[in-house]
Every structure is written in C-alpha cells, then in structure tokens.
Image (cartoon, rainbow, N blue to C red; front, side, top):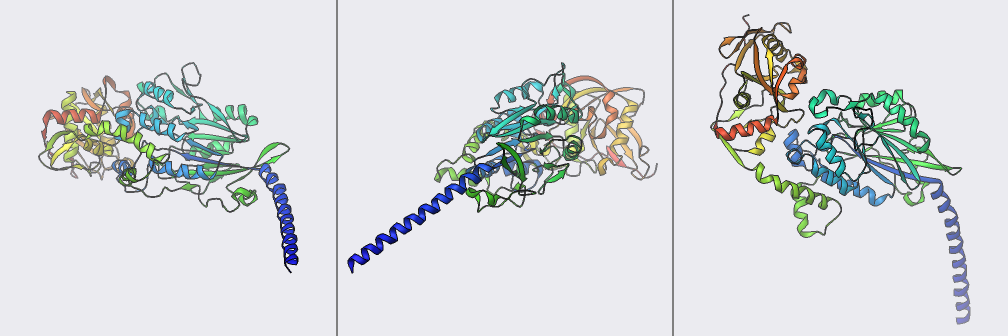
Length: 555
C-alpha cells in the first residue's frame, strides 16, 4: 500500500511539474512578445503654477479655500512614477512668481523645487519676465533641466541666451520631441525695459520651422505651449505633424482632451490645482515605433500589456491632489521617515520662507480706523484714497492714480504688518511705479475711460490730488463733467506730473491713451514697496471719503 501511495505521489509530482513547466514556457513565449511589441509612455504636466506651494498661499492670492500647490502636486507625481517607468514631466510656464515668497526671492525657490522633482522641460511664460531679463537668465542657469522658448529671440534673431528651441527626449527608446513656444503678448503685458532687445517671433511660423526640423527624428512630437487655448487650437489647425499640445497661459481646466486635426490639446488649470496626465501607447512595427493610442482612444488598450493588465486608462486627463494642509505636512515630520519628494520640497520651501517670515510679520504702522477697499472698482474707498495719497506724497507729483482692479480686501483697525500689503495689493504684472508728464486733454480721456464700464467695472481708478464728477447714464465718452486738479479746474493744455504704475502707462486695463506720455522717472520700485515705506513714515494712518469721485445726474 505504501509503495502504491509513493508511486502515485511521484507520478503526480512529475505530472504537475511538467504542466507548470509547460505553462511557464507558454508565459515566456507570450510576455516578451507582447512587451516588445507595445510600449507605454506617461506624460505629466503642470502650467501657470504662479509660485504656489501651499493652499495658504493660494488663499492669499485668490481668496479661495481649495486644494492646490506644488507640495501636493509632488506627491501625485511620485505616485505615478512608482507605478510606471516611462514618465516625462513638463511645465508650460508662468511658474516663478506670484506669491510673497517668489516676490522676495525672485523665483529662486521654485527652480530648486523643480530640480528636486526632476522636471524634463519648462517653457518660459510671460510672467517669467516680471523681474527682467537678467533675473530670468539667472533662473535659467540654475535650472537642471532644459528651458524652452523657440520664438524668444535676441536682436540678431537667435534663440535668446540660455533657452533652447526644442529637445528630443529618449526614454525606453521612445523619441519624444518637445518644442517650446511662448506668447507674443509678453510685449503687451510687460514693461518694455524689462524685455529690451528681445523679439517674440510669430508662433505658427516658428513652430512650423521646428516641426519640419525634428518630425522625422521623433516617435512623438509635443508642443509645450504658453500661448493660451484659442491660440493652441489655431496652432493645431495650421501646423501639421503635432501629436500633442500641452498648453498654459489661459488657465483652462481641460478634463477631456480637445482634438483638432489629429492633434490632442491639453491644459491643467492653474496654481497646482491639477496635475495633467496623458498616456500614450506605441506599437513596434518593423523595428519602428508607431503611435497607437492616446488614453485608449482609437487604438490598443492597456489590457494588451501584461504588466499593467489590471489597470485602466484614467477617465480624466487631470489628477486632483488629495487634500492635505500645510500644518499636516509639517507635523508629519515628527513621526514619519522622510518621503520623497513632498517633505524635501517642504524643507526647501521652509528654508526660504523662514528668511522672509520675520520681514512679513514686521509691524509697519497702525490704522486708526478700518479702511475698506472691497468696492474700489465700484466707488471711491477709504483704502483707495490712502494708497493714492501715499503714492502721490512719496513721488511728489501733482496727481496719482491706482488701478482699482488691483485692490483687494481692507485694512482692519489696529496694527498692520507687511504681509497685509501682499494681500491687498496682490497683483504682480508690471507694477513698478513711474512718473510721467501728462497733458490735461489726456487726463480727461483717461478719466472718461475710467468710468466707461470697461469689462463691467464701474470705475477703474482710485485717485489723489484731483476730483471729478460723472454721470453713468450718459453715453461712453461723455460721462465726465467737472474735473479739478487740486482745487482748480483741469486745464486741457497744461502738463501735469502723474505717478502711477507701469502697467497703466503701458496701456494696461485699457488705458491706451497713456502710452504716449513722457516718462520722467522709472523708480524700479513696486507700488507695494512704496506704500510700505510710506506707511512706515506715517506709522499712524487713516483716510476718509472726500467726494473725489462722485456721481452727478444733473449735467
């Protein structure tokens, strides 16, 4: 009986071994063949981060409580990298500015973070020039990844110093061409001295040039664009050979890709609210890679790849980071081992932030009364008057104007700290203060524009050194009645000195008539810096409504 049992076990074991060996042989025959014939590439992308690391910073800028910021995006990047080996990470610009931290360090912290996260390429946006060419050139030198800008040229027509027109990134033998294109609107948004000597060439012609140059050298061709959605669509319509456009500039949340002329167009919102993701499959045919599918559309599905057979393409092209407050991240250092990359990123952030925290918390003055400014684009406000008065007094000009659309919130009664000025004057485009000579007739045109209803704003200026009356029921261009400079009627033939921001003198907020004014002095100081110094000199400050801007239905 024992012998029979022994032989039975022996025969069963041999049979089982042969079956398993046969199955393994079959698996070995199937897996390599499928893996060799299909490759998967995942592209992650960000745009318009505006220097936001944390939710708190986002709230300071946008006055919204939402999940956002680079710290959370970094966690999502690592989750994807832990699952898939072929991952490329790109950014479409407007990255190094927008918060007190970025302002005080001129974008350096976020470049260090991008190095830490290991970005593969970054296209320059218009706001990258907010501190001028020299600062951006330094940030480009610090970047440990290619910085792109095919249509940003020097005066000789060459791609500007430090930038590259394109790269060809090879990953798992997949050749990915990436062309960087930036908006030509930079010449409109930025103060001319900041971009002096630069030429922003036409995007469509430039893209066509480089698509012809590298198309045959690439398995996938991506345009990393800071043009805005409408311009991206136009680019896809007019330039053949682009597989994917990853965009920025207009802050569009594109959950389902836009397809134009076989080009997929993507964009991931702004401020780190989303991480963009696109997955591309390639088939190997005759030892060449052929684009098969983008997110499972019109081609093979993930199920054809054994190692990820249980996974599916994401339903959305966007990843929304899991909610986690800065406090929770900070507290996790005590109990958890260091994880890559969020804690490392937080430490970079913290090392810079601690340098400016003392400055931001410094007491600079005391408000005797509350100064509201929430309705500065609707009517004269106490905060608007204060800001305009300080600017005029510090610059010693006849009149001063503050762009009312850039004033947020209020100053509460009591001690004010420097950080409050970042909240009430959070706007950052071309806000250095300039002094100009302006003719009386131009003053009148500007005041008419300020009450024209531009972009549905009732008024566009908060003013000092002058006053005016207007009738909003009258036709545009005929709404302003009496204008006084000081206590005297406006003389349309006389020249007055005006202190305001470069943004307005450059035609911003619709003030085209100011572009022809004579510049007396460019202070190279921001409005915020001048207001802070003015408050420090006064320490105790207040302001009242003085009927500088008043409605009058009689005339």
